[in-house]
Length: 230
Image 1 (tube, rainbow, N blue to C red):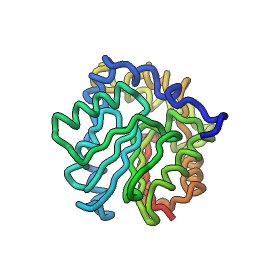
Image 2: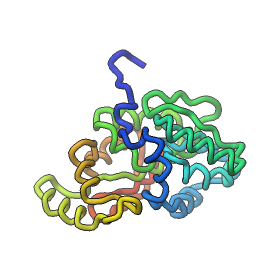
Image 3: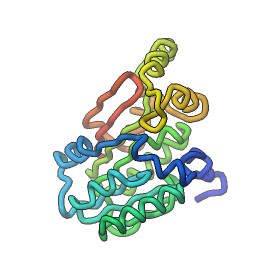
């Protein structure tokens, strides 16, 4: 790491460093990994696969994929998240799950190159300049032909259409912050974090050395990409 690289904990979001918030995180996020497991299964995920889960939070995907593969490496920059993940690993007896406290820019992969990389709702914390570097580093963790699946807040509209689409997105927010993200929380995200446009994010993926195999969007504010390392 060079002297001009940032401290990634500054991008983690204060809430993700807070143990009380982390304890309620799974109920708030309401994440079901089934569709992502199916998508990776169709591309060869199996008992010999090595999977890297980047910014896994409390490890819902990591815990779900571990019984289906040889090794999972879960990397998160938040000490509160990694502590929760280690507790989950011990409770479930997932001996093939390794937890590493690091970020997109500081993780140093060891062992066999990964067959799959997974990243959900984390790259929006990173400015576009650093997204490009992070994606290239993910590329280098994967074996040639390896697969990246990434899901995130990515806006599928033009700048001139922002008012209309953002108003619709905020109108669909939940009222109970324990069961999802409120309009106020989404507005804070817009003001302080770094979600980008699909047409910029796709260019970043391609410049980092990925071919996009599949793309889907939802409500013009959320996107899922399955990519292959060139």
